[in-house]
Length: 161
Image 1 (cartoon, rainbow, N blue to C red):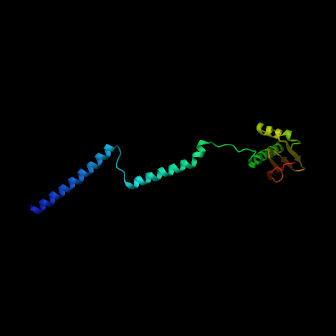
Image 2: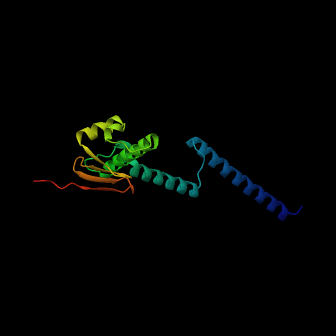
Image 3: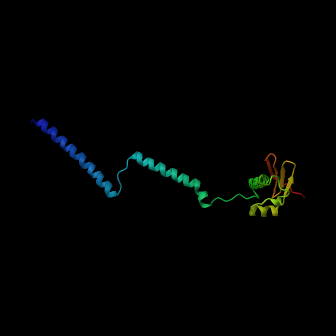
């Protein structure tokens, strides 16, 4: 073997040994730190995920701290509308079971909480030939229900002086 071939083989052996030692040193440092070495794209991805999680937590924090509260009929006309729909459906259920509309609202069995509300704010039930209408003034609302069309109209009540 010539001197040149021996030198090339020796340089290759040194390079291989140096690379192997550098890799072993990186592994040793990483294991000493208690975590495997991370690549830059992986670190960026983790930072993005942490930022997204923190943003979602920031947005949802008010819902976590203060749970959902039921709407108040004093400030939300949709509650009055939902109550009228329920009463209208109960009247229709009475008609289907008895074959005719009730003569008075007292014949319709209302849920306890709704019955208390109707006792506090009287509900006017008018029976027509083929349908009925409801007029109700709970809290500060004036609500009308047409049993023929199913339309509901809820507006702020006019204050009488």
